Length: 360
Image (cartoon, rainbow, N blue to C red; front, top):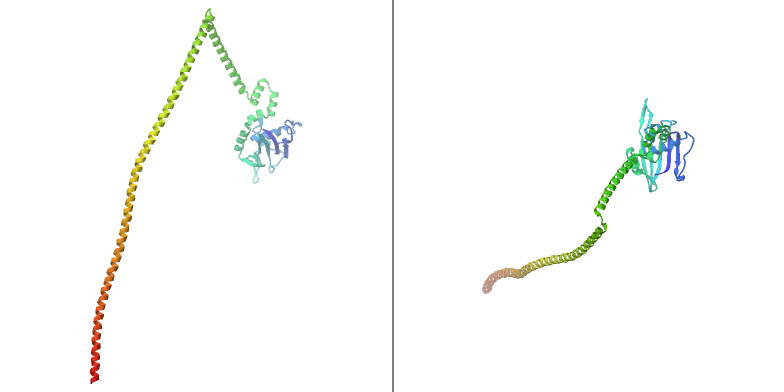
């Protein structure tokens, strides 16, 4: 973690708003000043901004962090901007306060507040705005709890003062609070156990060496020659076994190839049977299609004959109607001829009557 800017408003001895810009300082700097000038409060405010508690033995004095020189109407709080890796963060906190009620008598408690911001795109964006979420996020970002931060990063001044005034045992207790010694004890215990294991294994190896030396007898060179001869035989057997293994591997490879070929042959036979079955089915379908096409031709001819018959029926009906009309005409012609004959007869009689009338 790298501090960038710390801002205090009515915190401790600082009345009003006071800012400390760490970015203008070097990698190493000294915070100095007379006693009571507020040096410790800067680190207290930094710790409070991060974890919401004071460091060391003052961790439960959140109410006391507010300046004694302000009224209930004055705001009080701390903001701390810091960097972790490539990220930049800003945390703001307002401590809890006991203030006088605006109406009536007595006091009321004003709860603490906390907001964590993340720098993105040149702006501060809210990241967490609940105290529990802010505390959890700070521990995740820094990788340290409040106690670990005060023990590793910030050595509390109060604890160091007590350390200077206490005896040896009390100093040991304080050091255990400030520095984690559990790991040292665990490492020490593990080292002792590993050393004991190494000693035990060394004794076992020494005993085995003594046993082997005793087994060599009075003529170790002869035993060595026998061992070398046995090693040579074992190497020859190994070479023969390697050759046999290689031959077996080649045979297995040929067997796998033959097995693959038989599998491919079976697959080809299966495909051939499928194709033959398909050809039979195709022939059957073609025969059915031929019959269907022949039936379609017959149906076409039948339809044509049916249409011809229908036309003949229509023409026959028309002919019958013509015949009936001709018969009617013939009948009417007979009536007309008969009427004509009667008219001619009447006309002759009229002429005769006219003649008779003339003679008279």
